[in-house]
Length: 257
Length: 336
Ligand SMILES: Nc1ncnc2c1ncn2[C@@H]1O[C@H](COP(=O)(O)OP(=O)(O)O)[C@@H](O)[C@H]1O
Ligand SMILES: [Mg+2]
Image (cartoon, rainbow over all chains, first blue to last red; front, top):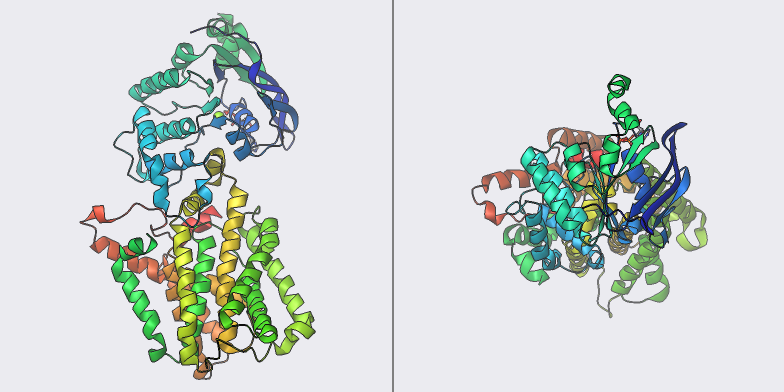
């Protein structure tokens, strides 16, 4: 771990602002994500992390500012276009298609690039050509053997794992994970950390994470967000000891000690 | 391949086909054709409501637009009636492109209202453009020509028209069981997630809208040729409402349920009309409310759920295909 070489960033935000009826949820954020790094985004609840993800992925339009993914300017593009450009995300709140099975979920994710989804004259069995790859991905996230139940019936941790499998199926250049381990048991957390470690080869990962042991074991760099602004940024060890960060998380009394 | 999959569920299919074939022996033949046309119309509306999550309140524009279109082709060209019907369907599809383009971005009730507004514009045009449409008199004397065959008897015309209805159902069934149908269901269930997977939600909705309009047009054109005239009633908003009502009665997201709903509503309207009732809307409306309150999944959806429970000991027989699973009215409303 730990070669945070900030040459040309693969993903860069400049002066990002998002207002909700006058309230600035994201307030002038600059962010550089180095290619091949794992970049953690931390900060108290309500700091604007999810809003920032929504701005990066086109689900929200910025009030001001710009986002670049490699050579592409993303501002004003639709979420689906941004996804196809190689920026994939998972959702903080589990977001699935209730009736479909996990395998069907992943098949859809894999089919997205092929145009098969337009073939209204073909049998849906044609999606079965992705079944093997889908099962492989389900196996990777620990869902082997759970491919055929309705996704709505999966236990919470397994739904989170499926979220991850969907993002991975897109084979993105940059993967944004919004609290991938939230609500998981220790075992699932360990597997998710292992998984992210494996999949980060050849791609860039940005993750929102509250679990500091996950952050410390995965992240090359950490950005701390507070009230919509970047409070601090640097390698984990430096951030951990940053007085302002401790204050933001625990309050003044702790920082004073 | 299509046939082998259809044959995989022989019982309901055979029953449906048999019912369609013997229908004019049991009901007055013109009413039988009405049922068949409305059944296809309802299936087309269900394609949007049940499988895409879009409640259109303007499908009269496509049913009625095609009724006039088919009628005009038949009146002015003298071409065989299948050409007139398919021409009407093509016209409906073409009309759906701009209407769909401007409305599929909207959600829930806004989509319903905007489609309604467009349909009212079509109504306005049909009413004003007297030289072409006949205005309030309707377009009269639509011939049905097929290489000199005498199709004036409604009994025979039912069998001449039935293949188009069956083909329409086959197309609708194929669409919901296609990769495209799978994407539609995912959009219905969770549009944001579908976008995150790279699917252009609006474009998919637009294609679904156009396909649905084409099938509605097929039904409407056949309806006009069956009656020999196209009237303003065909583009009136109550026609849109009646199609939605049939779908809800039969069961949203079941496709075949629309046919059951159509049979119930058309038969009931016919019965009440012959019994001398003026305000049939009150009665059908009341029955509608009762059915919706008692059977959330509609007649067909409820029946199928009961059958599925009986057949439950053999779960491996149940395909996990999404388009198959019964959907309650609440789910769709929540999505909108
Ligand atoms: N759609 C919205 N409308 C209004 N306020 C919002 C909306 N989304 C987020 N917010 C507000 O923006 C702030 C940041 O929220 P969020 O980005 O979800 O924080 P985080 O993910 O860091 O916990 C919160 O105060 C939240 O209430
Ligand atoms: Mg959040």
